[in-house]
Image (cartoon, rainbow, N blue to C red):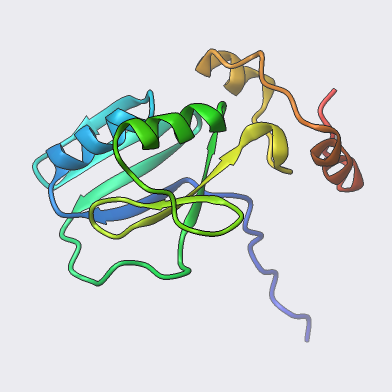
Length: 150
């Protein structure tokens, strides 16, 4: 008997973070990032990330994250570093630009140019980010998978 076909995971639609308060979370993340708010209620908010989104959900009760984190891709990593400094937020020790939000969610900041992840040209155009490009190593990684940008 043939094995049943498995669905192939193709990407993320969204990541959900639990926070203590939606308005405080929007204020906190608004000091660090330029974003478009898709919608909100008293218990949740949705921040557009091009063809994906970040969901903020009220109700965090667990302790701060240790090594568990997610990587947030940005167009300008240095701008985030400066925004963290301006907000009095100390990045976590280590080789990456990681920080904890006020509720203990650990976020790693990753530059778009340095990853083997790419947005389709029409998505970049819709985000007003057609100027973004990849560095040589990221292009090699994408090419090895048959995904190098034109």
